[in-house]
Amino acid sequence: MMLIRRVASIIVIILMMMQVGGCQRNGTIKVGFAGEISGKGADLGIGARNGVMMAAEEINQMGGIHGKKIEVIARDDQGEPDVARKVDQELIDQGVVAIIGHITSQQTLAGLEVTQPAGVVMISPTASSSLLTGKDDLFFRVAADNGAELQVLGQEIWDRGNETMVIMYDAENVSFAKTYAEGAGQVFQQRGGTILAVIPFSDDDKTLPGLIREIRLMDPDAVLVVASALTTALVSQHIHLEDWEVDLFASDWAYSDLLLQAGGKAIEGTELVVSYDVNSQAPNMAAFRERYIQAFGFEPNYASAQGYEAMMVLAGALVQTGGDAEGLPDGLRGIQNVQGLVSPISIDAFGDVIRPMFLFRVTDGILSLDREIHAPTPTP
Image (cartoon, rainbow, N blue to C red; front, side, top):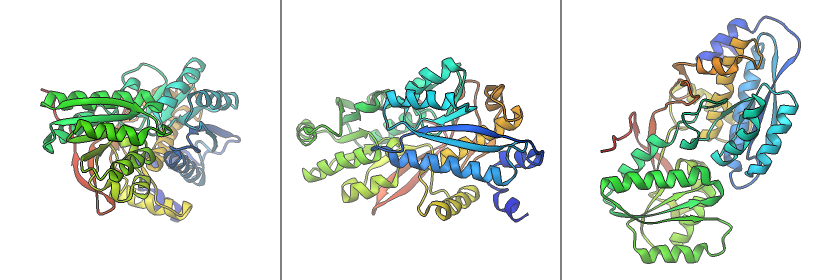
């Protein structure tokens, strides 16, 4: 009873599993996880993996799904598309019913080249590129499409009094970063702003300091960096070393404590729009945060929370299929208005999810919530 009381408030899907978990059957249900566990995006990959493992353990402690325990098989895609394809095939060969992954949109698109022909469901905790939106396929996600975020971010940059902007995006995750950069730039221009340049770059590029100096000569009012937390922090440090004061904005990809740790004073005042508030005091989120810290010894990031939710959403669909892969797509599309850690989760006919948005600003070394936004600013 103590265990039931401890987890009953986590997510409504858990209640469904509590009702059917007592039916004892032999065997396990294999679920794959594929994400960037090593590399510059490892903070999100490790966080998502931990969230998935934590959810699976809690489900198993309650008796599993129809008496079957979940076995999570984790693989590192190293942030490389070729590796993503390879590990997804390995997971399929091991008989997983579905794959939770990937972390970035670039690796997700690569992995779909393997999972879709094989008829295997993929559910991503964090991939938000609009290139994945509205597809009648076997891809699902608990991360919101970033189209609404771009409307809010572009408006926010303009509302801050900025009339000109340069956008930098990480070319190594082009499927996300380029579309994000172009989308935010388009909204900014629609409001009356001018985009001076949209520049792809790599954090391995030794010319980055020179690139920052070139951008400074353009004299933009604002700079938007579309990159991981570590790379965004690196760009910010170069701007800081130039003793250049410019309004700095970042993408949701940078939403991590690593941004604060690596950026220091250089990222003070940076603003970003995200579809998840990992610091929410909502009861489910607060309880999850406490258990996560007890389990791993450090705070969860948004990928941890969405990894947890991805496993719970998948488990809810598996309850409907008796633990089998057959029927999973329909089971996932049947997830409607289920209470997640922060906000309700509903999956549409194309496997996409809708969430509220949150505007954050780095203030005194912390990511401070400015406001919650329930609808995107309409495009004129």
